[in-house]
Image 1 (cartoon, rainbow, N blue to C red):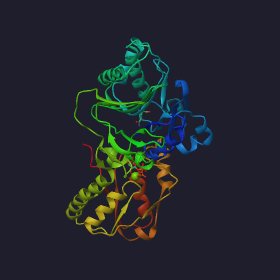
Image 2 (image 1 turned 180 degrees about the vertical axis):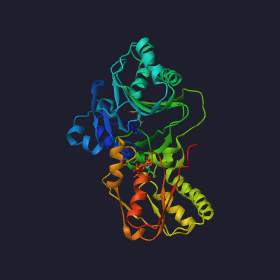
Image 3 (image 1 turned 120 degrees about the horizontal axis):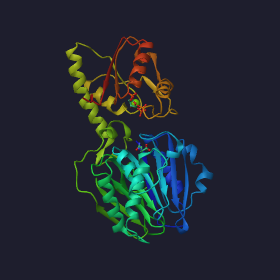
Amino acid sequence: MCGILGLLLHDPSIDAAPEIAEGLSLLQHRGQDACGIVTCGPKGRFYQCKANGMVRDIFDASALSRLVGAMGVGHVRYPTAGSFNNAEAQPFYVNSPYGIVFAHNGNLINTASLLQFLDAEAHRHINTSSDSELLLNIFANNLQQTGKFRINEDDLFTAIGLMMKQCKGAYACVAMLAGFGIIAFRDPNGIRPVGMASRNAATGGKDYIFASESVVADASGFVDWEDVKPGEAIIITRSSISRRQVAPPATFAPDIFEYVYFARPDSVLDGVSVYRSRMAMGDALADEVKRVLEEHNLTVDVVIPVPDTSRVAALNLAQKLQLPYREGFIKNRYVGRTFIMPGQQMRKKNVRRKLNAMALEFANKNVLLVDDSIVRGTTSREIIQMAKDVGAKKVIVASCAPPIR
Ligand SMILES: O=P(O)(O)OC[C@H]1O[C@H](OP(=O)(O)OP(=O)(O)O)[C@H](O)[C@@H]1O
Ligand SMILES: NC(=O)CC[C@H](N)C(=O)O
Ligand SMILES: [Mg+2]
């Protein structure tokens, strides 16, 4: 899932870009394919840099020095719609009306009808196959309908509320209006996360941040983290904060996979610690493992996690079952997350590059491998073979995420 970020610094003489890049690197686990930053400088002019690649590769000192302005929006992308083309790297920009920059985390499900509407009725040109570009253009079209030379918060809330009626699916977004401010909103079901925090600026006044996960706020000294509510929009300008419930309450349906895998363990999403939720998953899995082992008359000598994400749950499981816990797979820290890599070949190759089995911890043992999830089965297939190759007597795999029926 992508990572989104918005920053507005109180002191207009400080550039926001270095801190946005820092924040994006803390969200890198949410998207490794592309990243981008757009800032807004004097006279409402936007400065943009986006490309395929990791944050540390795209945002070197020279790229950052060209991003002028005390407010901006950033994005790290894990493509879930459209293509891997760098034209679909975010944030997206439209010049009309007012100049809007937009970063989206989520997936729309009614893209065909939105595209038809934008083409046939709104006459807006869509240049990529990204659903995020559709969302932005629906928002822009709604704002255009005001016909005003200058808009205010009320107009923005109305446009976002209408957009929430038109667009179906998951969307947590951060937007920026040229010379105006930054905006965050979240779909009425709260499927994807986004929150807000503030800190006292050195020159008085406050700096504000929007981010997918609270870890970004923690790391840069922001406090009072709060989640944007499902169906809520928040607008922050240089002089005010306004917030409004723009869509009627719907069933709260946050994506469980954020807790299982996507989010960093040190983040707190919608008041629930990701770390603690993974501990609880380990506890629950321990009960199930105990039941299955008894049912099949099996014994386990050692619990081995599949790094990285499953380690928290695996440790709790081992403690609860009073079994030894060993880090039998060592992870190459320079290889990223395989599940969000593009293409099956690349994912398969990288599981082997990423994990190495220590024979000493596997040989002649009944091993219980614990993973947070089995999605395509790429990881489990490889690691079972790796465990066998180094002499495991029996390999049992347990996954925290139950089967989807
Ligand atoms: O069944 P699959 O399609 O292989 O997907 C599931 C696996 O992918 C993820 O790991 P990943 O390597 O992406 O990241 P991690 O290091 O955070 O565990 C997840 O933690 C599982 O291990
Ligand atoms: N992971 C995401 O949130 C992706 C956002 C958007 N659907 C894209 O593919 O760019
Ligand atoms: Mg994993």
